Length: 195
Length: 236
Image (cartoon, rainbow over all chains, first blue to last red):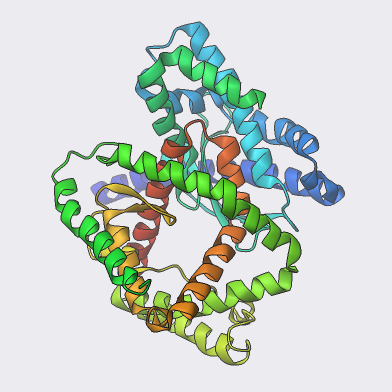
C-alpha cells in the first residue's frame, strides 16, 4: 500500500512540473506569435517590406532565441575545435542569416495567424511546442523547441513540416568546415549576409 | 519515336533505384547516404541552370500573366487526380479512414467542384491528405536508400524513385497520345514550379551550400512524411 502511494506520489511529482513547464513554454510561443500577428495586422504592408520585416523579426522574435545554443548545435563536433573568437563570429553571422531567413519566410503572408496546438516535454527544462501557421495556401506545421536551462524559456530549434533547421544547417556547416575550416565557414556566412 | 523514351526512362530509373538500394543498405548510417554525390552534384547543377534560364522565368511569367483563380484551378485539377493516388496509397498503408476522406474529396471535387476546378472539399472539413508510393514503401519498412538527384525532377532517394516510377505508369495520362501526355505533364510541371517559386527563393537566401541544404531538407522531410504515415497506420 505504502509502495503504491509512494509510486503514485513519485509519478505526480514527475508529471506536475512537466505540465507547468509545458504551460510556460506554450505561453512564451503564444506571446511571441501574438506580438508578430498584432504588428502585421496593425500594418499589413509590413509583409511586403524586407527592411520592416527584418526589424520586426529582430525586435520581437530574436530576443526569444538562444543563438549561442543554436550555433553550437549547428556546428556540432566542430564547435569545440573553434577558438572563442571564431565561435563568437560564427554566432554573430549565423544570427544575421537566421533573421533574414525568418523575414523571408514571413514575406507576402496573407491574414497571418498562429495557433498553438499542443506541447510535449522532452526532458527537464526542454519542451517542444507544436503550432500551425495560417497565411499560405496550406497551413504550415511549425514546432518550436525551447529550453530554460539558462534561466527563462528560449527557442533553440524550429521544425517546419518535420524539417529541423538546426539539422539542416549542421549538414551544411560540417561540409564547409570539412573543406575549408572554421575561417572558411565564417567567410561563407559573411559573404551570404553581404548579398 | 518519343513515345519509346517513356519505358526506357522508367527502366533506367527503376534499375537505378532497385539495383543500388541493396548496396546502400549495407552502408553505415551516416548523416546522409550519398555515395554518388559527384554525379548528383552534376545533375543538381544542370537542374539549377535549367531553373534559372527556363523554369523560374516561365513560372514568374505564369504567375504574373494568369490571374490567381486560373492558377488555382490548374493546381486543383491536377490535385484532384492526385487525390485518387493519395487515397490508393492510404489504402495500401492500411489507413482506411484517411482513404475515405481522399476518395470523398475526389467525389465532391469532381462533381460539385466542376470536374476538379474548385477544391470544394477543403472547405467542407475534408482536408487534402499526404500520400505517395514512396511513403507507402517506407511505411511497409523500406529504407530510403541512397540520395539521388533526378534530371528535371530533382531530389529523390532510391526508394522514392521507385515510388515515382510506379506513379508514372499507374497514371492514366501515361497511356495517352504523345501530344496530350507531354502537354499535360509539361503543364503540371510548370504549375508545380509556379507554386514553389517562394520556397525556391527562400532556399536561395538561407543556404550556404545549396546542394547540401536541399539534400538535408529533402531527407528530413521524407523521413517525417513516412513517420506520419506510420503513426496514422498504427492509430487506425
